[in-house]
Image (tube, rainbow, N blue to C red; front, side, top):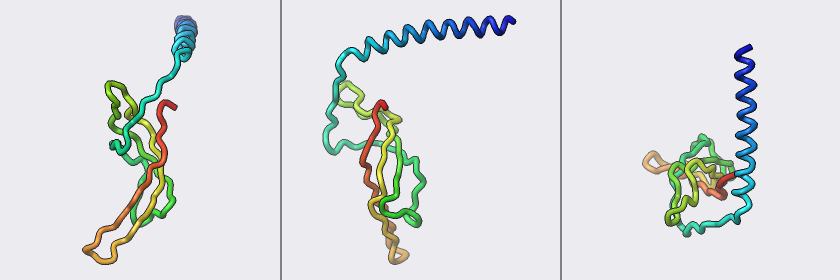
Length: 115
């Protein structure tokens, strides 16, 4: 019984917090949003999430990555760490000889920020 009562109190507290959080969300979203311009050629530190190899990858294969270091514009976070990045394999080339290197070109086309 005591556990059930504690559980009931927790749920009631959660409902109160949820109502307060809902009011705060309405207040926050009533202010206009602002946009930050990230300069062209800004480098992003990313980590691939998709396993990829020059031996199996084909042009057009989908790839996913995440941003591992935030991008700042002035004192503001323009792109947060953890933001998903999406793209495709653009080109793969197998080495012709043992001294040549394989080539894997990826093209990232979109990034998700806050959503």
